[in-house]
Image (cartoon, rainbow, N blue to C red):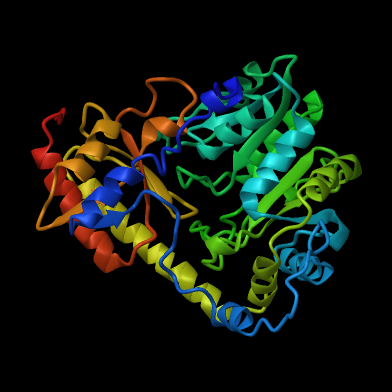
Length: 398
C-alpha cells in the first residue's frame, strides 16, 4: 500500500526531527539542554492552574465551533489594551495558532496557489501549505542584516498570477526580528495594490524589546478586507499544552468560510478554553516579570554566543529565539553529532538546524535556531557545552 503524494512530500520538523537522538541520550543518563523548541520553562499563571483544578463540570461538552463567547469577549478586551479594536464576532477560537494558520490557508489558498514568506520562516508554515496543496515562495533575508525585510521591490518580484497571500510572523520566529511600522506600511500598500491577503502571526506580541509600543498589522489603515491575524495563548501565558489560539479578521467572507472548517472539526478544546479564559485575568505583575526574565535571558545568551570564537548572532528585538551562524560544515550534522557522540561532563545541547527554516536547499546550512526558554543558569551551562562541542567537532570550519 502506498501513502499519498501529499503525505510523502510533508517535511520532517526541523524542531523535532532530532528528538529520537535526544531521547536516546537522555535514556543513557546524559543531561540534554533543549534549546530547539519554544517550550518555556516559565510557570503557568496561578489563576490558570486554579481554573484547571477547579473544573467541576459533570459533562465535558462540545463548545460552540468558534469558541465560548465569554472567552471571545475577554480576547476582545485583551486586544483593546493594545489598541486593536476587534468585536467578539470577529474572533474565532482555534486549536492553537497552528490551526488558525491552517484554516487561513484552507480559506485563502487553492491547489497550486502561492503564499510569500520571509526566509527563514517558521517551518510548520511549509507543512500547512503542503497540507492544502499550496506553494511557499521565500523572500530571502540575511543574517548580516539582522534579517530585516528586504526592499519591497524584492517582495513584489515574487508575486505571480498564482500569488494569493503574504505571511509574516511579527515578532519573528525563528529570527526574533521585529518589523517596523515603515516595513508594515510598505507591506500594507503592496497587498492592497495587488489584492492579496496579509496573514500576520502575532503570537509573540508581549515580547518586544525595542522600548517602543508594539505595532500590530491591525494598527494599519485601509486593509480590513486583506488582513487575517493569527494568535495564541501558548507563549504569553506559558501554556502551550492548552492548544488555544485564534484567528481574527474583519473580512466577513473569510470569517464565514473559516467557520465552515471550524464546524467540520466541531469545536476547540473545552478544558483549554477554560484555562485560557482564566488566564485573561492574570495580574500585570506576572506579565512584567515574564517580560523581564526573557529580556535578561536574551541579553545573557547573545553576549555568550557572540563571545564564542566563530559564532555570530544578531540581536533579536522580539520573541524568544535567535538564529546563530556557527563555524561548522553542516549545522544539521553538528546538531546530530552533539546528541549522538559529544558529551561534556555528562551534558550535551540540542538546537534546531537552520536549513529547515528556509525554502531553498543549501540555505542556512551553517545556522541554528536557539530558543532562550531555559533559565540563565541552564543557559550558561548550555553555552559552555556548545563552546566545547565546537572546539571538538571534526567538521569545524574556522
